[in-house]
Length: 354
Image: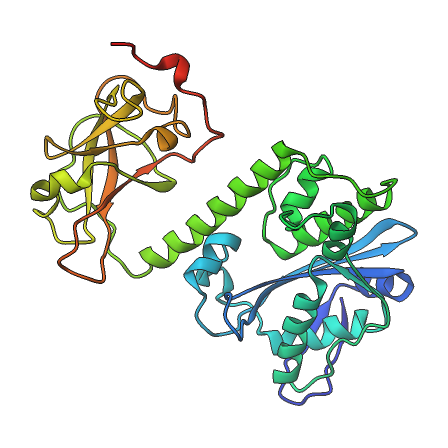
């Protein structure tokens, strides 16, 4: 191992691999990415990834978790899946950044939304009383995405960009993995002959990804610190593992059942396949939901279309909960936890004709 020593007296020495240091001396650029504690005005760094490029080839990589010693926002943790347990025992940003920055300080930098990563890194550098990054040359693949896929409603996240470039891999939201994907995106963007229009299918996929991400972040923040163990007896049946909540229809007419448990409670429910009995979508397949044997609502057509085929035959049980309302007098609303939603299915061919 080779050590690059910080000149700051309170900074613990941090060892970089000798191969990374050697590769950095001749690299053409460094691709960087960070993961942070949250989305507020002063997020702290949790993870840094660096990919060194020379002659269009990856010559070395660096991946380092860091412990900022501050709480992690539940919404951010839902995206990057970095937990406090993973950070325990890791060095602080002030212990790691001096050596990392020294190795790449003179290199051109590449990133996706690069200004954000440089700002995060430089904020940490200032806290550690070490010089930040002031690259002479930069390349931002998010800006290249805007040039090659113009349009007012086009999403330019890394995952959506890769989708438009034909790479159907989820963005992992870990620093090194995202830096490697950024380099892959740059190579594909460079090979394009000119700007292209986003297809309707790509736009819809991007919309659904954004919606799912927002729902996941909000759900994680809602659940933070809450008791989520069901408080009623568990019925017999096939248990479905939930990965997201869906609102039930018709809760307003089942308030007497829902109000038997405190607002915000989690409980076991059973679900049964059936058909919507009235309204515009009468006859469409759905599932009815029962709490302690009494109905509390059903899935609307649009929600059911995203969970078609996920409900097996026979007795099925899932978790559900009522929402926490600001006004205690407001009606209870219920959500059930279902497997991850898929692309909507046209339910018209399965409609029951009475």
